Length: 380
Image (cartoon, rainbow, N blue to C red):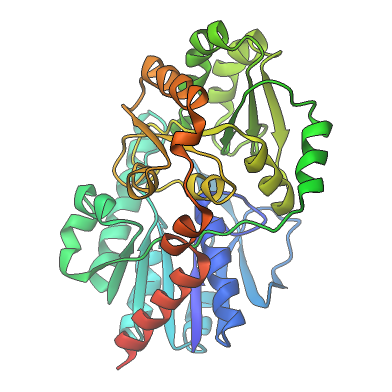
């Protein structure tokens, strides 16, 4: 099958959404499908066209930025040309341009599958409220024009105002999750490189408002009372994050206060991420709102034998609730997060499950198989 993927940002931009799409696209190519990704040339230095993991990537030039979004004047005609070359569409929302693509798919009588990754919630301000509203309208139009919508969990689908409008079209497919293989020597080398000695609390995310980084920072005093040598290892982009300059400035004094207990790792490679997860005693996902819908890093950590603690948000709480490998805490509650971290550190073995149990529930192969089946069903 010839599949056209579309999303505003794609690799090398790193987010849960881009990782999801990249893993799914690459696995479908490995299974013999042709996949093209239509995305933005958000960085002018990126090539307009290239192949990544066997996936054809087409980037539309960006004329301007609007909050965290982009304006691409040539997107429409590029989308029209590509739609004619493909059999079905996989659109990843939120995305302003999704409605136009969905309309093209409807006119060409192609299956159009929308994967609703999360809600869009821009920072406060009248202009951002306007942008949010425009994108919401486009997403609603795309939902009406689509053939099916995919949610990461029934929990998220049940609580999403957007997905609740399209209940009859919603299918649940767990996200594609995988970790790179590493040796015991790689894990030890990572430990030596970062001089790991005491308990390690891991967090893996962009430094973005919705991630709840301050919830972990405010939990640290209580943790350090019990474990004075505890340390946070933070994997992910923490500088020059699109649209998050004010957030970074607001947290800077706390980062300085805990500089002896907080280490930014930058953006590790896939093998380094596996070593990172393997060296963590617990991973935390203190997300604050519905721009977070699952948290794949939880499952990645679990596949490496590391329990997780996550906010009780719909969808985000599901990996822990399905596996029992960790604890769920109230959203935005630093005291509860600190208590949960101390509980896991004090009895870690209680929260560890066999890797096979986790892999049976979540994997890239399982996600790709279910997408294949969905597209085959819709093509009939």
